[in-house]
Image 1 (cartoon, rainbow, N blue to C red):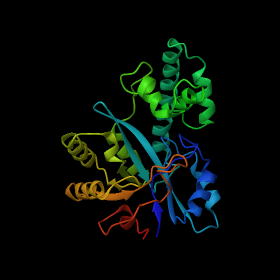
Image 2: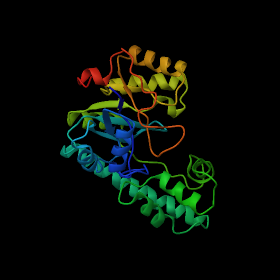
Image 3: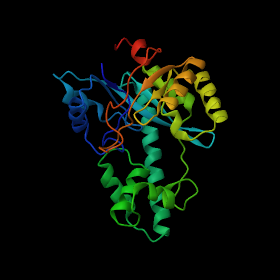
Image 4: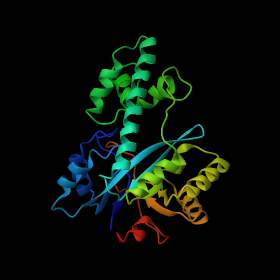
Length: 275
């Protein structure tokens, strides 16, 4: 069975519609897909409808943004009731925070003589949750920077002139709401936070103490040593493992399902009986 338990559509900061994402997953011969948009489950109904009658099974997913010390940490929810009222209320608050943050980012860019960015960023979001990546696209398309990463390095990243700190929920609240809706709470892409070994272990201790179920130990952009390190940490902290590409858009480097080989180590797929 080929799986991918972390990907994004235009309901957040992906570039494909949920339907286009499902078609791509089918072309990649994926059997099980979790659509995990940032703080949104609005793309799930379309994705499930697109997969109906096909070999692809789409399960509910979401990637909840949280605040931990001075870091933005993401918690993926898998296989939950997407209509759960308390989870919906949390995601609504997160969406409100995203909009307020976007307005402040636009104000800061205006002070740098870059005007009208909020309207353009909302246009790129196309009704989905708006984020810094949409502002990065605006800056690239206007020719202000050459690439998205340059937008973060010069304007949107921590310490830069248009950076706005977030007010996301806590890890504990994200875990509680995901599990309250019947889902599994997964620490997303732990290697992407660029934490020292000491801080990564501190994060795992606190995530486990909050009741977290699993961590993403398998990505498509890992070498064998990185994958083995994360799998060993999952065993050490008694966490299941999960696997996801974190696909946002077609590229040479990230593809749905690519390299997500599952080891025998206990994973979310065993816990839920998916394999």
